[in-house]
Image (tube, rainbow over all chains, first blue to last red; front, side):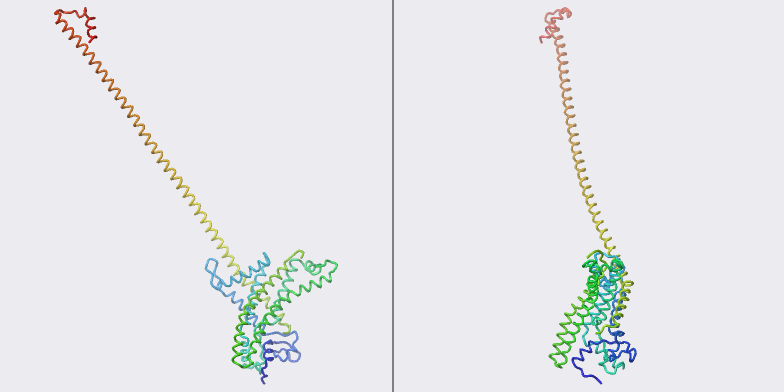
Length: 290
Length: 156
């Protein structure tokens, strides 16, 4: 029994993740009808799958290229890869100054390329892959109704993904804060300013907010930009409901325009995420008074 | 768009990929880049050194050329001096010689003249005596009239 396709159901379908989770009534399930029962123990299988695949794409791209030794002419892919590394290194240098932190480079590179790849999924025509998964899962008998087959293809439009990465960065900042300044130094930083030791609760309230705002804004910025971009694609796609050639062409043109503009957003947001990651880590390394 | 366990999973996946990058991707690329950078720096340094030594060689070459030219010029000048000196010496010697020759010639001439004159005087005196004796027909005692003869001879 196929549901009637309305603009609301169209948008809803595009914004719903393929979720598997544990329910009270039927145990582990991927059926969206039990979505509300899952609570926290639920996994957005689509976001996770795509992000892992893209992670491996990053690893493959950077690991499988042939690295010519230094006395030979570098291959083209090697040039590209080295350009990325150089770019990341330059950003680290300009933010950190010099550092002997060996993790920051790989971290920033991973963030840049991986987030860029995930954002790039946004440029695949908005109905292409969801429609494909609909038909495939319907034909293979996984779902009875193709409209029950949900699949979101842009991991960074899922706040779980962006906040998950931000959480990783947050843990690293705390780790380095404690490692560099010691536990006491970290606590002192949280409690002893801006107003000195007579206003510790107030200081703590301010500083903890500041501390938590960093990862939250980091994750939500990326999510917000990509979600909004995806939303615009979906809204433009709604023009098809008019069933008219004129609006079809208009929709194509608008999609193209928005996609062109979105190339900027896609790369810019990946870049910003990387820069902020480096920045937060460099702040964790800062010692001395503010 | 609920927050759920996806977030934790993603944080873990993130950690895994960062670790993979940290362990397997970053070091080889960076070491290749650093190695190449070092090699290029060394190459540039070598090129600079070669340039410097070329410059130095050029300078030495120019200096030596200059010196050689100077030396050649001084040799030529010395040779010129020497030759003119030899010429002058020869000239002076020749002049002295010529003078000597001339002098000795004139001395000889004088001697010859004197000798001839003496002889002529002697012959004259004898001629005078002979003539006088012929004239007076009488033998003149040469010894007696020596003074007269002498006077006569001197008057000639």
